[in-house]
Image: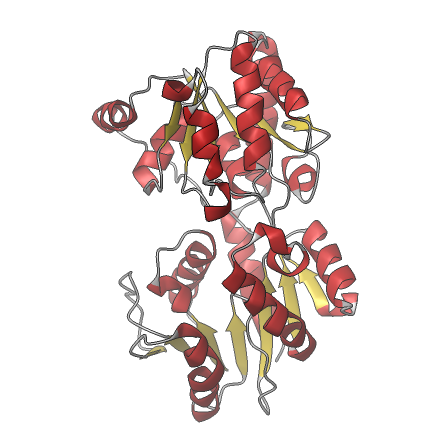
Length: 372
């Protein structure tokens, strides 16, 4: 079988989708099968791919990703006479003779909730998502909530959609940060073990950034003592929150970390008091499981896929616009006794075990081969 994969996500600063592609390549590289794999990228990747002779990599010069995707990639697919093509992201609005394709749709935010996404992303979703789903042999969703969104928003036949829960490698055992690493990271941000509440992600409208900040300020006004660590960039639409924070009495206790690397993220998770993740919409919600693996209480919203992923292992905000209720959730966690904390942490560990990375990779591999 001649299988093609778009790996261009590995050419950029990648996390979620890039991690999935990288893990899948390593998985199939370790298998003894007779397939031939053709990998396509619009520019050199940012990671070394030590792959065997079954793999052929086509790399372009990186001028324009969208033009490459629409005009160069289809030519490669035809010339390589593929049987099957996997698009880890959604854009593949073509029907190529004798080539069956599967696309991954990770979330519907830019298509259905345009105020949550950058303009360029919204345009790409509006132009290509529906057509890509129409032409796909199979559509992969990463949660049941995602499947319902695709079916409802795009009017796709549900028989065409398959849900495969993404396995999250998160923090591999045996790779714990050293005491020296912990000291360096915590000192860098001026924080100490268990003295801060953690948020991980881009501070954006989709992540409910305004409610998050207002809830924290309310929590502090009512006697809360924990600092707030914001690990991620801030979206242009939320830049105004800097002024909100700077005008408050607690500006020195709200830390903007910006983008953090893997080591910094690990240290921040494992030394946090709790995770605050009141998002409005997610495709899957990685930080929920990351917080649970770090054995800290998780506070999230009861919308989108969050209840599906976190189950009974989180504290929930029922009204995503109610920042006073969110501040009460923060207090609720802070006032838990040891038995209550232990119980919610144990439930979290069970959820982490449920989303196994190897099971995801195996099911994705089998799904690809089921199209034969």
